[in-house]
Picture 1 (spheres, rainbow, N blue to C red):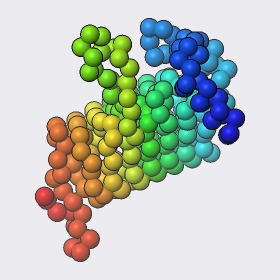
Picture 2 (picture 1 turned 30 degrees about the vertical axis):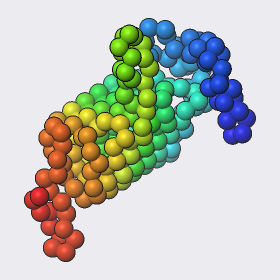
Picture 3 (picture 1 turned 90 degrees about the vertical axis):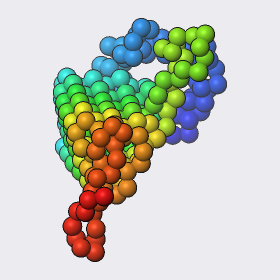
Picture 4 (picture 1 turned 180 degrees about the vertical axis):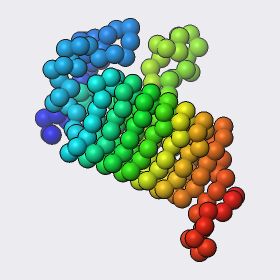
Length: 208
C-alpha cells in the first residue's frame, strides 16, 4: 500500500510521466481503456465480493490508481458504464445497477441500493472557466457522491456531484437531484424536491 501511494505521488507530480501513461492506458480520442488493459490488468484492480456479477456487456473504464470495489451479491447489468478515472467507486452488498446506468467516480454506494434503468450518478463535472479553450479540453473536477443504504433511485434520474442521499430514501423516476436528500425522504422533479417523509411517531409517510 505504501509503495502504491509512492508511485501515485510520482505520477501526480510529473505531468510528462502522467501524460505518457495516460496515452498508454486510454485511447487518445475517448475515455475507453485500451484492450490490453481491460484483458490483462482489470482482473487485478477490480475487487469483487462473493457472489457479485458483472455482466459481459458492462463497460468498465478504469484507472488503475483508483478503486473499483463491488460488494457481495451485487449485480452490474449489461450496458452499465463504470468510470473511476477521477475517483474511487465503492458499491456495497446486495445492490443492483440496472441496464444503461452510469456511475462516474468518486462515488460511494451503500448496501441494498437500486439504480434504475438509464440513471446516472455523476461524481464529476467538466471545467469550463477558460473561454479561450474548448470545454472538452479543460479537464474535469470531482466531488464524491454518497448514496446511503436502502436507497431506491428510479429510472432516468441524474444525481450530480457532491450530493448525499440519506438512508431508505426514494428518488422518483426522471428526477434531477441537485441538493442533499435527508434519510427516509421521497423526492421528485427537476430539480428534485421532497414530497414525502417518514414520521416515526405515527409510523406513516406524510406529505410535505
